[in-house]
Image 1 (cartoon, rainbow, N blue to C red):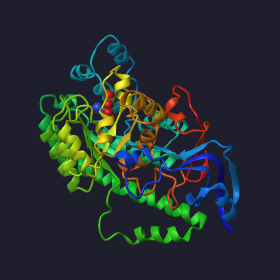
Image 2 (cartoon, helix red, strand yellow):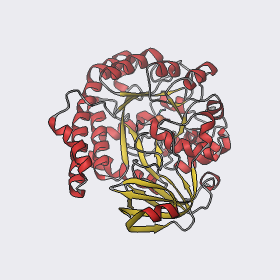
Image 3 (cartoon, rainbow, N blue to C red):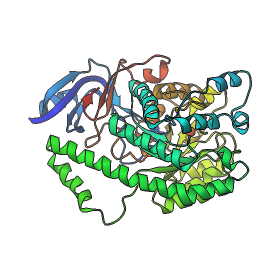
Image 4 (cartoon, rainbow, N blue to C red):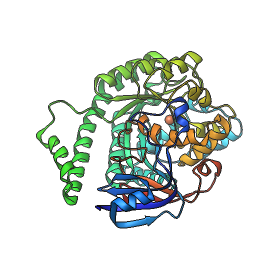
Length: 453
Ligand code: NIG
Ligand code: FE
């Protein structure tokens, strides 16, 4: 018998979302890899056994055992697109929109994102951490165990760096695994009104290098914490892995840090996006882009050709761009919560994307303006109804594909031996119920890195 820390057994459905080392695309998105009467064995925060309860209980012996009582056990959800570091709310804008105002008109009039920028600039780091931590708690309660967080409510060097410090502090102190994204190109700040090129110069020459410097400290701190954690657990295999960083890497690390651009009217055009993405790429950032949310400016094609890990929104993507996306490694992130929040009946063509062979992920886009929603099950519920995704496709879109959309596909998003033991117990006997029911919370237990929260 192999000794492990935790066994979870008697899962009516163990939904693994296992993939063959890459995101799922096209018809493969219908396979969620269910094991009936399944179980997992966990050691040092990772899965060491996945299979039928009988096999796992015969092979492993655990300090702690959880009986899932025939319920669904599935991977923790991954939310690949959020803007949860901000101050204040946008309740006035909510009412303006109910009365007929459009999102882009509110932005053009100096409201929207800019009104959140004004408040975020004034807020202290401690206050922003406190508010964002509350949002992370809501996401965790709804089953999200890893997420991406963007800056983009600073729009000046100091405040954008302040937002990065907030994200770093959250990653240090909260169980959620967090991937940072630098979104200084969220919109043009009032100081640069009429001078978008000047702001793009500032982003390329000052902000991106400063953000890359921030990351080198963040990366070191994160690895030092991991080292101490492994020393405490005496996990020698990982300690040797970590020790490498103490000797100093011969080359700068590949950054698990993204740069994103909002390519849209009243924000950045295709040429400006191209400048920012190519500067970011040269500095070692991975790339993402907000494209085709309202207007097709040709951003999808350029972002795919620039090697973006994901392109997000895609409401106005063209047929030829869908083809190009399907033939690429880039993940399409669709955001049905944004359309729902705007009261729209038109959504990104997720069905067409999957049928064309694209790999797609779903996100909440949790933010104060276009999508105040912490729940990936809610995103699934809307997507199944309005974008005609099957529950199986939606499930892969919030787990394995979402993990790939933020560069975590090798470690997160599925229940497979060697991956991080982030999983959920849901109070349902069929996983499809997680997309079928809406408005409540069916997640009864969240296990993060092998520990029940
Ligand atoms: O993804 N489109 C731009 N950014 C966000 C909205 C942010 C906000 O309105 O504060 C989005 O919808
Ligand atoms: Fe967004």
